[in-house]
Amino acid sequence: IIEVLTRAIKENRIAFEQVAALSLGVPGPLTKEGVVERFPNIPGFENFDLKKVLQEKLEKRYGRAFPIYIQNDVSAWARGEATYWDTQRFIYLAIGIGLGGALVSERGRSVENIEPGWIVKIDNKPLEELTAARYLINRVRERIRKGEQTNVLRFTEKSEIRNLAIDAISEAA
Image (cartoon, rainbow, N blue to C red):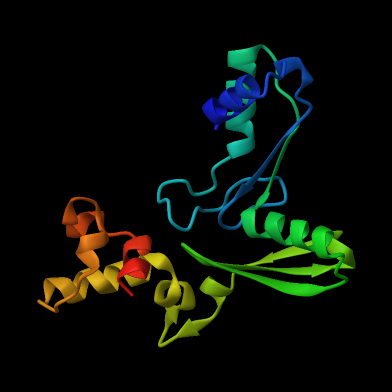
């Protein structure tokens, strides 16, 4: 994150002193203090104080830190949609690597993160495990290993099953 920030500052010819704050949208649930409870698709980061780590790294690298605002990525997207469309209230769903959502009211002034992919269960499995990219990739891998014929590997780097990604599955479809 620090490297991306540094590159963006340099490429846009901005003095670091001009940066007033950093705003991040991250996957998964957060505490009110901005501590990442868990990254759904990145194991090993439970109760990770991303804000504190970033502030320490900024201080070490640049000699100063600045305010860091962290929110759930889907909530950030939903807030942007509310602003763009000037919509009073709605439910925002994001389907991708996971299945996230947000409840938006007061034209985006109130955004509540929801995790429908982990709340809704089918046959005792979270909906996210049955609909998200990770599940689809694993299901296609399993079918290929069982010998099912498919052209999906043509769209995969080096035609190897371990390199299978969701875009290859989409292309093959």
